[in-house]
Image (cartoon, rainbow, N blue to C red; front, side, top):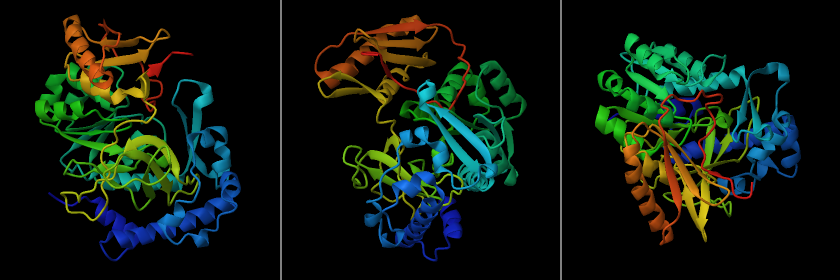
Length: 431
């Protein structure tokens, strides 16, 4: 097993001389001080928020923990106030809508230099799983300049790896045909879309697909196991979000958590209630700071994602940190009892183990009923799914809870307007 290629990439970018966490931390601390200075003097938002902060007094990351957090609502309310360059230097604007309402839009701005930083990371990150013998299909948005698919294609072509920018899956038949015609060996896609395709077109996976990179959303463990055991795929996962410049971290050949983009980003894991750092191995909220972004630096941004730093060294032998796979979003839950919550990730592992299920939606109705609609042509599995869900709920509550499972036989995927929208378990009580 080879050491993650991110190690040499980070050493080269940071200029550190020793493969030691301490030397990398010193580099990151210097970059943090630089970005504080830069943001305070160029961003209206940070010039106000950090007005009382003296970056020269930040002598350790314990000091850095006194810097106030940046929240998603800060960006939603004043995206232009984050800009540190003239608007004429912006070459890419991404509008994110996480809730389906215009009031929830966030706009993220990129300069050409920022996009090039992402291409550079993607080039190295994709080498964790691909080589020149691979033909990659990207099932992500890629038709516009600076989109994630466009940047991935540029990165792969710099390594002389053939890349087809297919875009998100709308017609599974068309996607499967394109995989066969282009002799694709590696897919990059959204977890639930890849699951849908693999179950609808299992013959294509068995005959063609050797590697898969899953990104943009929480990756259910049941999907990783299925692709690995049933189709013999090597399944890599990537963690990133638009706010951090798309790329954040990617798994090495050990397939046991991400090595992070530590030359460009500084990561923390905090207790979401207290804001204090948690020990390695303990789950908390992911927080990041951009170290090299020019157009729109973001400092101590609370992502809402839950993960943990591994307390163990990676089997690949790197000195870099490993972040265990993200387990979902803190708010992706509904209350089902006194101080009891049901998380989307728990439903994923319970429902998606049934291979006749292509997709599902879950919500709590106005009347307080847990309603689950599965996408499947096999209504006979409803009873088995009901038993599995009842077992899950009973373990959490200690008593039976009313719920309903229905089947929608329509296996044609809905058209995806914004594929970066995260799946969510909805609660309509009190709406």
